[in-house]
Image (cartoon, rainbow, N blue to C red; front, side):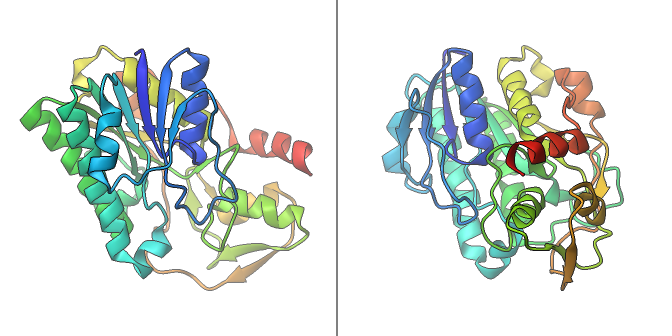
Length: 302
């Protein structure tokens, strides 16, 4: 892999991935339109070729795929609650945008596309969640991301474009979004503690989540790009830890006061990744523990 393109590469997960690719001396092109309302800032690596473009605009982005080896597609309308408020935007970005990425990759002979999807596809399925489970989409967000998965599989089987699909479980880490009431819970709680406000716990706080470190997610993407295992192509892989915490646990790890706010529609009661498949086929497993990371994080910013 000499040249890579990262969509959403100025955001939380994407920018961490871009930094790792550049450390490995990969030439990186970034597309990001800075549309996420949860980000307090965006992270453009000056060593990359950066374009503030929208993935819905095919004619504008198409030429950037020339001579690219691997595309990492992370750009998305990526929050559950905003997708309920605006399903059309979720469909435009996550379905049309993904199709644009795949078609541009096909047109320019890109070798492989690594697609970032979501554990929200499992809905109310009983954990642990396995890739072969029947999906249970509860929101426009999960429906739109699952549609992107289907496009990825189809572009591989019909057109021969190599694709690998990842379902992420609650990613946290450096640069995590913290703005607004729908920001991911780890970053939101840390921000609330730092500002002296109580942590806001949705519902009863007993809902459980599998929290996955962003550095481990970046490593999974790079392994997928470099793997010679043809059996991974067109396949779905969970990217999680196989361990979960309830939200009260998280507040207690931070040793901070909390208040309860009303439950939200469309959210799963529990997520828990079965990571057998990714361990066996990509030799990936998580390295970072949430409790340990939070303790070190709070020492740095507290």
